[in-house]
Image (tube, rainbow, N blue to C red; front, side, top):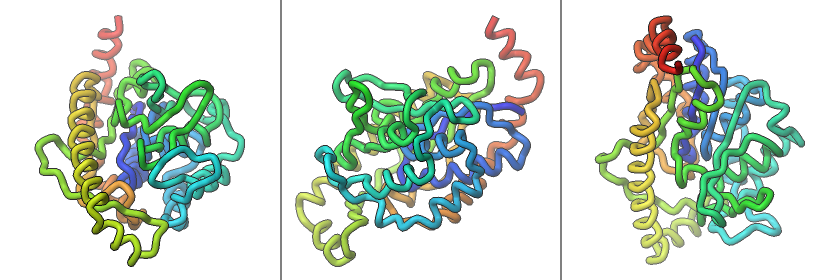
Amino acid sequence: MDISLALGGGGAKGNSHIGVIRRLEKEGFRIRAVAGTSFGGIIAALYAFGKTPDQIEEIFSKVDQSRLYGHASGDGPSLLGLAGAAKLFDEVFGAATFNDLRLPCALTGVDLKSAREVILTEGSLCDAVLATIALPGIFPPRRIQDWELVDGGTLDPVPVSVARSLAPGLPVVAVVLTAPVGEPARAFEVNLPYLPNAIARRITRMRTAQAFDIFLQAVDICNRMMAELRLEKENPEVVIRPALSHIQLLDKVDVHEVARFGEQAVEAVLPDLRRVTAWPARLARSFGKR
């Protein structure tokens, strides 16, 4: 039961990808290729690098989430930095490149200079991960070659077509972390994880922070619509959508709990997964290619 996996972005919600992969493996599905955007890009890179779901869960459950967002020398303009995250990825990946991965993998970014999506399939894994998670305005852009890259979810919240290109002929399973279109937008809190709680609360009561909350709500609505339009166009064989609307981008979360939401979401679509990997569906795709 071979599949290709497309992991969407969603900040802290992305820990649910761990549970999705673990349950897929438990049910006998073999992930032959993986593409990821934003936090989905982190999980995609770790999994393709050879880390098991349990090992990935251990990495994120042990990390101090409040220490991931400091600024580093040379950072571009941004509300938060990624100095702690960069240190973590350097410890995990070292000097590894895409050539060191155990299965086909691609991460996505958006180049601010050309206003185009960039598919990252070569070079430093650390650089690619820091590019795909660079939420515009929140984290600094990442410079790779001549590109100035920000979060791939800006144009493609769930990289279905990328996953399909990595393993032509296999069904694509898309893991979507955005809320459905039409679900009421929630007020955002401007989380500043590196500041003491009292100071952070004082800042979030400022008019500027409240205005930024409104801006983030509008961005979330646009992101949801972008996700739905891309999914409608690229038509993944199965969509997995964990119930995560209560979690915001930069929330401190219980990694184990969020991963369980991913496992539960797989349970709900097991009949569809088995149908698209059964021999009649494989045969139909084969004739379709011809």
